[in-house]
Image (cartoon, rainbow, N blue to C red; front, side, top):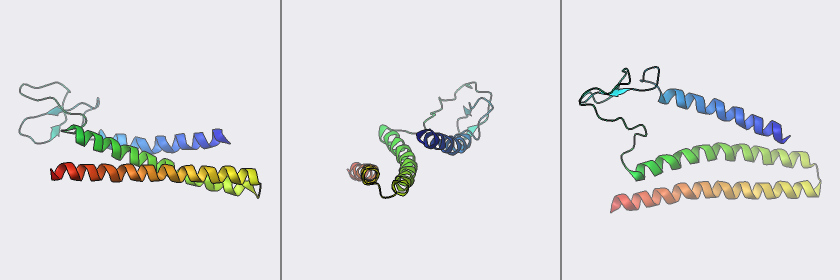
Length: 139
């Protein structure tokens, strides 16, 4: 049972990540490299070689540590939301297969409690980060 659940999550994760990675690679050459041409304002596909006067391309596309942390938090929240959804489905499945067995119902209740706590932590992290960002921007 655990193997089937883990395999299902693995394949859903793979099929949800590939379109994101493919979309982020758009506008580059076959190797994924591009050349920033000064004054052009956007990355032009190129041979991946640095041209005279061209600066280094920032692969993270962030200009500060705060933006980096914000992007990491957004990524963690997206992945956490997907995992939270699957855990809620799994907990519901645990309640269904319990069929009145008090021990299994107790296990399902514990799983539900920890899933809800995880969701609240995920939501709380987003709220706290937004509050800190608003405070820093106000200063």
